[in-house]
Amino acid sequence: MPHISLRSDLYGITSLLDFRPQTAAPLCELTHLLLRGPSTLTEAERELIATYTSYLNDCMFCQTAHGAATCQLPGGSHEQLEAVKKDLATAPLSDKLRMLLHIAGKVQKSGRAVTAGDVEAARHAGATDMEIHDTVLIAALFCLYNRYVDGLATATPADPAFYEALGKRISVRGYTMPSNGYHPLVIEKV
Image (cartoon, rainbow, N blue to C red; front, side):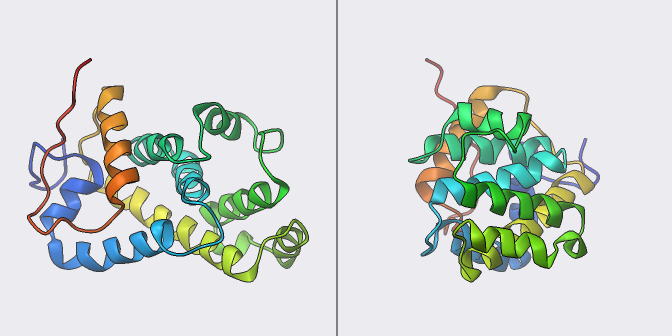
């Protein structure tokens, strides 16, 4: 049960964004820029960084929602996502993405855990300064989201169909705030 009074028909971060639109607006704008804005990293790669950070933080809502989005975007797959969770070192990834995820994992522990050697290794693997910057910011932002969602004990659905529907919504709409407010997901049963 959430620690504060939230709408019972909204879950996770959505319930918090709906609760305080004034704080939601800049958060949504930043998230949309980082995960859907112009970048040399694909949308699936950026979602994977968010998912991996959320996985390391054990935030079930965020890791499942963004994992579903990762898998629904071009270049993402369930097999790759599961391999990253199982063992980043052996997951089927480019060296560049592996090094960026390594940096995201360091950020998840502490910003100070990222070393000059980590950054140099990412550069050596082909990462640009902008990609390194955005990886650190995505990981830091999702640490904030994970703590926000779990710190207020938001409702976390158990139904995988909910996350598939949310992943589709995220992959299609991105992170812009809806002009007519947040609405519950309609889950189509097949």
